[in-house]
Image (cartoon, rainbow, N blue to C red):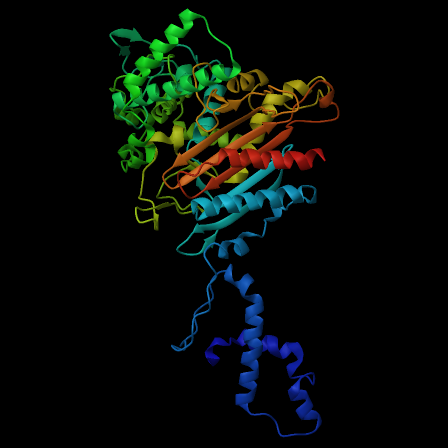
Length: 548
């Protein structure tokens, strides 16, 4: 038992006054009693040491582990552990100096922290990190839970995690810069840049795949599911559900279509029902059940990784239907290489340098990457386990980068600045240009017809971003805000980056500078965690405090 008392604890006890006439030993000395024996002093020191140990346990628990005692007492009982859900909360509450919470947003921070705790507990996520910026300034960043469960490493704002498909939005910046420089034509066949990708046919007809179609997932190139029949049945099933919803809505309104349209709708519904009867969502494999998601093969460049899918048939005629495809972005990486004259990763690192995203790198196993989290999943027995090793070199452009919430906030602010700077030019001529031109950002954030936004049914996919447009149907009722976001799902990771621009008019730009709005980034080391609605709620909470 005595071995638990460290020399440091003894020194603290001595300085505290026990040997200076303030405690029992002082009283003994005043009446000239014999000095106390070593055993009594040791016991007293142990009591003080244990008391101080209890007081300091919270702080020491998050620090680097101290060396073990030379010969620990085998009978000493281990200290009681907190429940797993509570332990990280105490560890992760402190904020870094760069992201000290603003008193102005205290209510929003407390409300958002509570929301994140609930989400974390509901899905059983080991760790989650959030960052929020208001009008270009980071006002809050915090980590909850563990970045590394085995070694009890807490999440913090600097924690590095997989950002998954937010990588697509980063790739869009490379494509946009090349387009602005006149080095890339978005509307000519991709074979102009990448002749290694074969020309395509659909149902016996020659068709063209362009860069613009690839960006908005309208190319017809497959995703991880290789079975065309399953994909088409799933599409038919979704179309049938949407049509039923539309018909029910029309009936509620009491409106009747003309007889010809009714017959056409009825025939389409019957056709879709016959094709989609056996294709309910539960029978279709999700992305995390697809073998290609867990590839371990290393690809030297984007051209080499094309062999995974380049000879597969198109699932749909280009431009006709939306089919989300990470492989389409693998082809876009090859286009970036040919149009820029640089390797894709080299070109992206130049962009990251320009955007001051110094912790954003490709997800490789070999390099030592400080603050990198570990990634987790629940097995069939609902036990938390480490995810298997994967090599993401085949999809750098579509889902292969690591980053932090701070870097994602910088990226979001750069995009928002470029989107808004044109509105401020008349009131402030000294403003610097955006990284992308205003007209480029408007193009990128304009919803594209025939697309879908899976993480918010109110929106559509634009160019590597999902966009929800401003809308209000009834007075004094729900008001749909304009925002842009992208979510991500990778092996052992989930993410979101959401940008909520301030609603500006001509007068609102006076005495202000861009960017104006709320940006929220959330990363998590657990797969299949939906985060977009949480990010939107957090953004609206901060907007409330911003307006008060």
